[in-house]
Length: 319
Image (cartoon, rainbow, N blue to C red):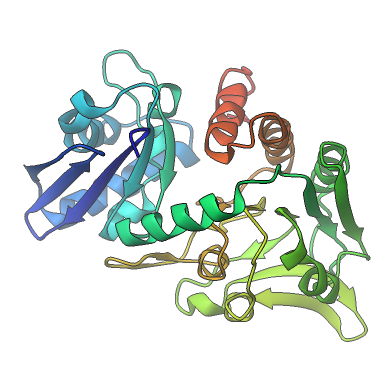
């Protein structure tokens, strides 16, 4: 559609090939860089976010990946990024213009897709589900799991967010069980999980979401179990937990994470995290997201609005 710009990055041994695709044309630009050097820059940039200290990697990555396509990036368009190889680990929204210091997310609504063909299929699925308003939500917050620290912010966020949906079901504490999730999740427009999650990069289908204790103790919902669920109604899944978008990198298929099987189950859009997240910051981010989503029914712009609200809050922990 005219409202979308798709940018596909292919990482080769000695260069990055960048396809920019719009409704009317496509262009190809290549930039020389060794694959190992690119991986090093991505890791340096991630480290700069973890320790709140900007490094030169940002400028090099911006000039390499964003500057060549700037002329195509109209402000109103949604930018769909299809990264390859180690670029799947790069949080594109955090790249800053070397001169203006504006983050990419300040100028463009962004989403990431595992592949171009997946984006086309997901867009068709979203269109088929988009006639009705987002009127229902299943919200899971702070499941009581032995051995895991409590997440009071996750409980607050789901209680507050539930007020925005005419039909809602809230599962918190001991009531947030795996069995209840499996029974209820496919019947809601929006599914929100605020709890503990654990990525398993070596065995990605063993990545898991942690639910409340039952008779046999802590209950985990593994990625391979999610892959067997179908979500005929769900339009958005929010995984407000640690590293739900983290996992093993595969060429041409995207990151294999706990978020991935939701996409495979028919959910057009999943919001997930690339690293461990702060409970208080996540509470604030998701509350703004749900408020914006209830108003606009547009999850991509709702997420951008939430990100910008925290970025401009002046709170270093939230940002």
